[in-house]
Image (cartoon, rainbow, N blue to C red; front, side, top):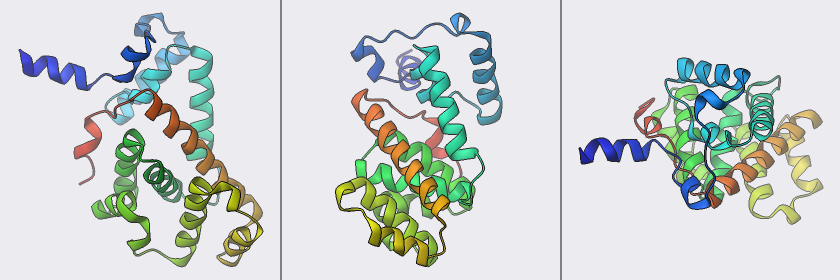
Length: 201
């Protein structure tokens, strides 16, 4: 009995209780969001806790979904793997447990390399990466930890590595998005779904 209770507790975004943000039952959500949640469960196998956390406000949930899908899945010269790599490096700098677990798994899956996700979590500088990706991650890390010191010289390094002005915008947009989500996840003590831990290993 205790084991079943513990499993149910792990499946919930724990910080919401502390913040007194009650989540509506699934049936109370608008039809489009119920459908989106069902598609997530079908494709992923579970509903990511971050989506459940946003369900207290349909407007904010739709805004989050739209921004995430545009930045991480939309048209860009950055590959989906590169965008996930940025997510992990930013989340590592911010020590965001939720995003490190969730996006570390995405790096493992997209790269086919179980070690790469852990390398980026612990210290992206020791990962064996092409010069282009190393420059991208250096920019994302600097923009996260010392944004006021990020300037023209850093952009020139990205250009020399082969990135266009639009690419630099995309790198900065993904970096900015995960700095925002890291802070929300940390502030609410949002826990990743346990399912992420064993995947793609």
